[in-house]
View 1: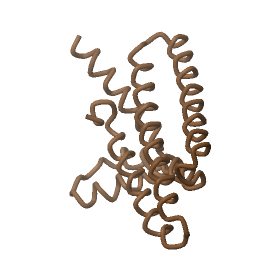
View 2: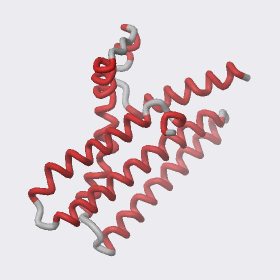
View 3: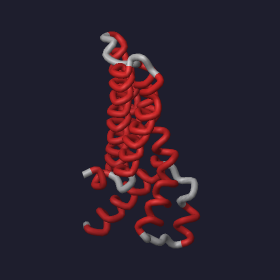
View 4: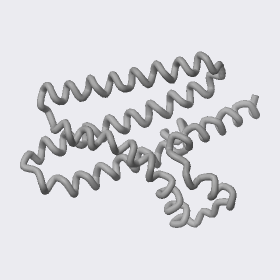
Length: 165
């Protein structure tokens, strides 16, 4: 399902979850409130996954939309809404003391960590599965972030849509 939105999105979500597992396994041994640590971390991971999916769908919709002014307004409005939702969710978590706010923040950082590591994971995955890229594609993908890959994927969908029409 995620691959329909964007080709890079499943890898990004897997990276976020993998980051959560690593942080969970390394940090839970050093805190006294293990339950609060875990709830906060996985709350943050869930928010990060939601943010990744929302970013991908907003970019996809904006590229498909075509009108650059309206698309730009939509991207800005959805970005502001995304940050407001994160602040509200963190406020609820802190107000009800349901989990650790710091580990929730660490969980949300999983989106950034996964986005930065995704090109590396893509190369490793390609080598493991025996996929070979053309030299020009390998050179152009060396410094590509997940957001760039999301944009590239929506560009390809738009091209495919135009070809079929």
